[in-house]
Length: 137
Image (cartoon, rainbow, N blue to C red; front, side, top):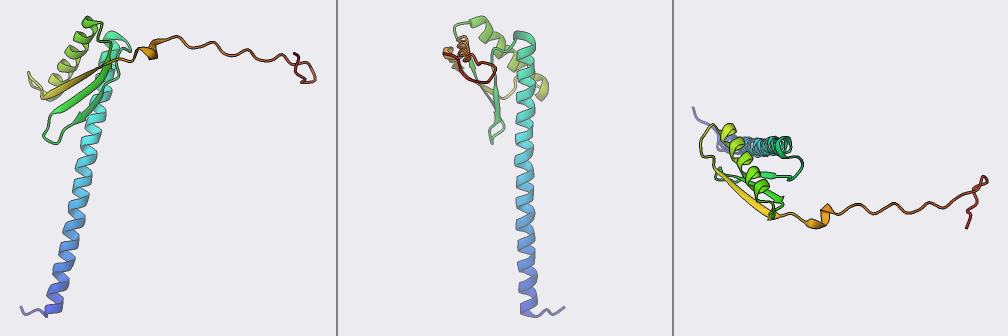
């Protein structure tokens, strides 16, 4: 089979373009799968912590490119029992999900901001209005 040079160049160009588009679509699908897996694990971990301890921490879960999971959260560091329980819950959950005894997980703990725990300020008093809508002083 003898092809014209222009035809061979066109076939190669179309093949390269199709391979490039296919590769980009595959890469996008893999990135979305990783993101979805991280979100699912984050929801599962949040639910497990809230079920056992209440709303004491809000974890953020990400997967590194080399396969290890990173769990970051702000916790009340002055409450050692709570911190230990949170780490145990994270370890147990990831062990179960990965079906291994020692999961590849890195837990990053930061001190919880104490300013978030203060009570809310009272609402400002509303001015009294007359029937006609005029403000009384």
